Image (cartoon, rainbow, N blue to C red; front, side, top):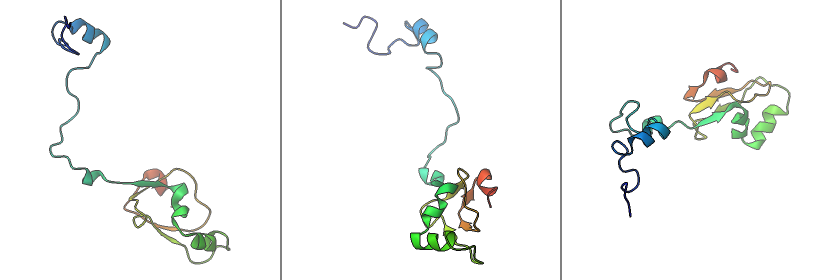
Length: 112
């Protein structure tokens, strides 16, 4: 019924040629071990530049975008909206804006 063994049996023994030929790198380890890895440290939701203005309410968006450029700039608090990092994809309108976030990518910093 199972003359060569069940499943992947013999991968390092009697089926060695098949595994080495068609599945190189199947056995072994790669990378470094991370003991007791908790995901809290790596939680970093991100938002792109082109979505920043959508975090404002429609009223304040109209107030700052449609009117002539005023002395006051809107403050967009990204952390309050649930994001930590601002990435640099997209374009921003030619209006002054203050963005509060924990992290900025290099490309996003060029816009400010």
